[in-house]
Length: 279
Image (cartoon, rainbow, N blue to C red; front, side):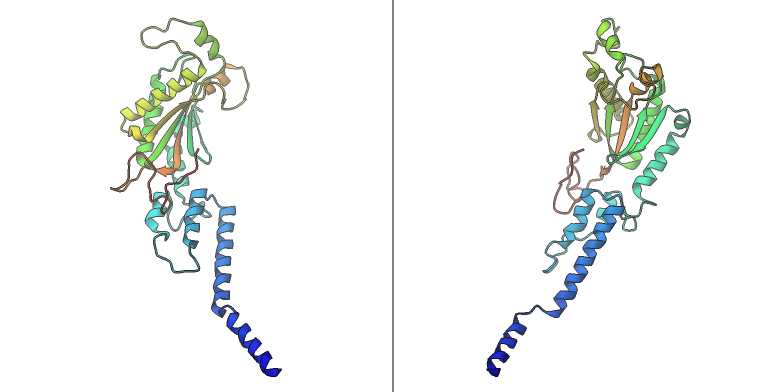
């Protein structure tokens, strides 16, 4: 009877996991909790989280080294090893925002330009009343100065640019009620048409000032995305919505290696994939 119990105890001991595996599992769990905390309190994007979690692939086996977090890859994401998501100070996005505000310091004081940030990147809204005439998509001399500054910023920061054109609701009557545009400007079909033309004209000027056309997108939203409902119906509100928003996309670097296409995101952005989230 005693011998049979001894055999059972030996079998149980053989079936148990190695003691080092328990400690290792605890370390992995704690690291995962750390990254969850960094994601919660920081500004990590889903792509950055995927980059970090890719290092846990096959974590109970042998690492092949193909998915390590290299300093160069983090730099391509506009970050450095010392500037992980939880560290807001000194991040590339903050530095870029400071540069934008410095370039447009005069326009910001005169309220001709608004600078905001969201998940897409830095948004430069050109909202001055003398930037676009009502019912027209032609660039005035005043807005050309502001657009040239944006072109220089895009080149310095090496970022893709999304140009969003807008119009005001009061332009509908002007567009539909006038058939004489002269030789410089055609008749617009609707507010989508004129807003898209404003975006295209802006993109053309930026391309003419050295920004690669492959970096540029141009879209029109018509009068359906007003900037703000401040004093609706007033000339000031209408002028604010006759605008273009120049979005410097923070997480889409134009940097390419010799083996990468100029027309897609860098393949090294996330190890072994080009997966991104759509805007």
